[in-house]
Image (cartoon, rainbow, N blue to C red; front, side, top):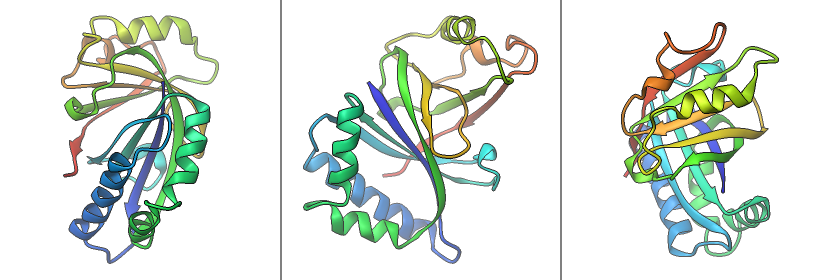
Length: 190
């Protein structure tokens, strides 16, 4: 399973309520006429997106798909028949953003239960296999999911642990030297 994660903010002067309503309409459009290989999506409020360089609050969209082929189908469908109007409505309000593609490493993604996102960045050359085991330590695979970046479309952390509560694996005292974790609440936009 893959996730296209899109971090974004509205353009200057656009009200949050208007932007969120447009985002929800697009998410609902995808859910009602799901493209092939599409699993689920959600738009989450994020109080800070520090790695993007603009800090402050923004949004984090998760689009779950079966594989890279389904990602291509989603890309075409998002601006195609049945979704173009809702896509264009939110795009007109868009200010800035970036994205990345992540692969599921462990756990069961349950977007409706996400309330925390722990974004982990290793130092250059950091050892991945040990960290994956370390981060997954103690997670309930039915309540959390661990993701690794596959493609970056801008600045993006290497790993993400989505949970309903903070787990031992991402406490700063347990992370290896020079690793960074940005843990932030997430609230579904509805």
